[in-house]
Structure formats: C-alpha cells, structure tokens
Image 1 (cartoon, rainbow, N blue to C red):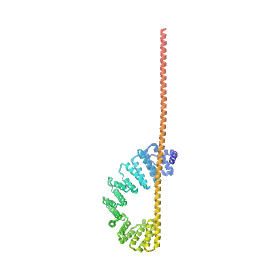
Image 2 (cartoon, helix red, strand yellow):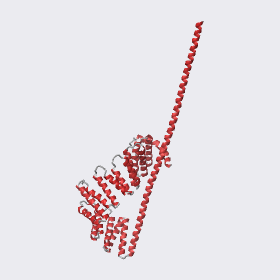
Image 3 (cartoon, rainbow, N blue to C red):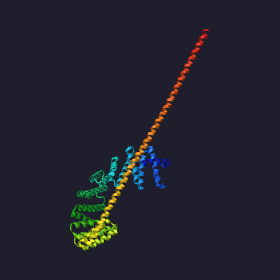
Image 4 (cartoon, rainbow, N blue to C red):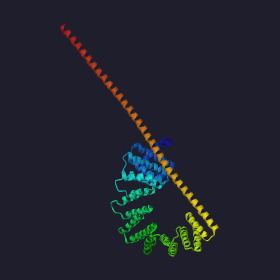
Length: 465
C-alpha cells in the first residue's frame, strides 16, 4: 500500500515534469548531474509513466534497461532490480525487441549472481537462451558458474560441454571452457577428467610460438598440480620439473607457487633435503606483493620439514621468523597455522608452558575466524533477504500499477458507455424530429388536398349556376 500512496503523490510531480522531459527527445536520458538524487528518480518515473500511458512499449523497454544501468552505477541495487524486473514482465506481455529483452534478462542474471543468489540467476540466464535466436556462448558459461555455486556440478559440467560443442572454433574461448571444466572436475575430485581437459589444451592448434610456450608452461604446471591433488607426487614432479626447465619468462607461472608445490611433493615423498631446497627457492622467488604473508607461510612449511627431520631448534628458528612475518602481514589464517606449529615445536622441546600459550593463541584465533565467518555469512544472508524483499515489493508495486491501469481502463470504458448512450439519445432525438417533420409535411399535403377539393367543389357549383 505504501508504494501505491507514493505513486499517487508522484503523479502531482510528474504532471509538471513530463512535458519538459518529452521535450528533451525520446532517446535522451534525464541529466542526473543537474538534479538531486530524489528529484532525478522522480523525473525518471515521470518519463516512464508517460511512455506507459502512450503504450510505447519498445521505447519503455529501452528506457527501463538504461535506467537500470544508471541505478546500478549509483549503487542503488533495489532500483536497478525494479527497472529490470519491470522490463522482464514487459517482455513477457508485450512486443519488445529481442535485443532489449535478452540484455535485460542477462543483467538480472548477473545482478543475482553478484549478490550471491545463483539459483535466481540461473532462471534469468535460461530466459536469455530461450529468447535469443543467436548462440549465447557467454550465457552458457554464466549458467555453468551459477550451477557451480548452487552447487550442482553435474549441471555446470553439462553447460560447459554444451558451450564447448557450439559450432565455430574459437581457440581462446575453447581454452577458456576447458580450463573451467578442469576446475570443476578438480572440485568434484574427478582428477582424471581434469587432467584430460588440460591435455586437450596442450593439443590445441598453436596461436603463435610465444603463446604456445606460455600455454604449455601454464598447462604443464596445472597438470602437475592435479597429479599432486590426486596424490601421485612422482608424476606431479615430472610436470613441475618440466616447467622449471622450460620457464622462459617468469610471469608465465608463479615461480614461488611452483617451487612451493615441488617442496610439498618432495616432503610427501619423504625427501626432506629437496623439500627444504625448494621451500627456500620459493622464498627467494617471492615478489614484494603481499610478501610477508607468503614468506610466513613458506617459513612455517620449512619449520614442519625440520619437525619431521627432528631438528626442533632449526624448526624453532623458522617458526619465529614466520611469526614475525605473519604479524607484519596481519593475516589471521597464517598466524593461526604458525601458532599451531609453534605449539607443536615447544611440546617436542618439553617447554609445555610455551606450548600451552601458543595452543591458547591458536584456539583463540580459530574461534575468531569462525565467528568472523558466521558474521560474513549472516551479512550475506541479510543482503540476499534485502534483495528478495525488494523483488517482492517491486512485484507488489507492479501489481498496484496494473490495478491502477485496470481502474483507468474501467473508467475509460464507463466514459465510452456514457458517450455512446449520449450519442444514442441524440440520434433518437434527431430521428424523432425527423418523424415530426415528416408528419408535419404529410399534414400540409393533406390540408392542401382538402383545400384543393373544396376549391374544385366550389368551382363546380358556380358552373351549375
């Protein structure tokens, strides 16, 4: 009801603004910079209302699409949702161009994806596929992303395979799809299929010599990582070592990450000397971007290597370095891991008091992280609830507008009935007047006949005399 009241109040303002807005031209949007926010959107309402009354649905659809973009730029998500939702309803009920309707549904899908409502986004991306007459490669990828977040990995994989089998070979797009497929297979722990996708990338036609070398380095690194996840560390190292030997440009893969993965693989193969070597190489390969956190993580891994080697004093040196860097980086997750390692080292050194202190710190951060995660999830749920509530209010507003339109049509119908009745009465009056004129003329003719008969009788009598 509050939206209906607000609409009634806006009518007064719209009457003043409609004429000036129409004078700007149908394709020109209202200049937001020259008006206050509230006044601007009231002006927009005026223009949209005028287009609704004119039943100019194509222009109305284009304006709803554009104003939704403007609202989103101003971070007014509920208003953007309102404009695009109305556009969606308009596309289902009236004749609006495919381009406008497809783009409107695509924008709604993206909006819901960004707001963490993939199940709602999926519905709009499906509408894009249904409405569009041309292949929608990116929409298939959006659908795959939506199902991956639901999560429904089987459906996500289905849409990626559908995109992969579309006609027309585009090497960049094909590689992009294969990479996404590989990621999904990895998440679902189907490592064989994930590796097959990476190997398919290796077999693709080269785009250029440099591109081929770069793609091969990246892909070999990915395959090594997948074998690493699968637990086949020897096979993983074969691919990692190939990358290490053929790395022409350092920016092709993250060197620190490569050496770190190799260190973990050697650690799991119980070759602690090589594990130390590659963890140290990883530290040397770090760049300045977020270095303290990454260095703390690697130093913590080195400490674990020395724990396994029962060299607890060396382990203690590295965990102390890790603690300093973790504090610099202010990363709570790394700090928690460092405290856990420190507690283990002091326990091995029989310093139970320090071990207990670090264990308390470890548990304290664990609780804080859990609380922070709950708070983040709560905020996300609140944002999603706000979006859903906005959608319901928009539907109520649109229903109210439909009722208003129905009432107006009813009044127009009553007016037409009254006009028709008035016209019928006027017609009956004219017909009655015509009848009276006819009777009058008939009476005049009758009188003339009687007079003529009397004259003829009088003339006959005179002739007899």
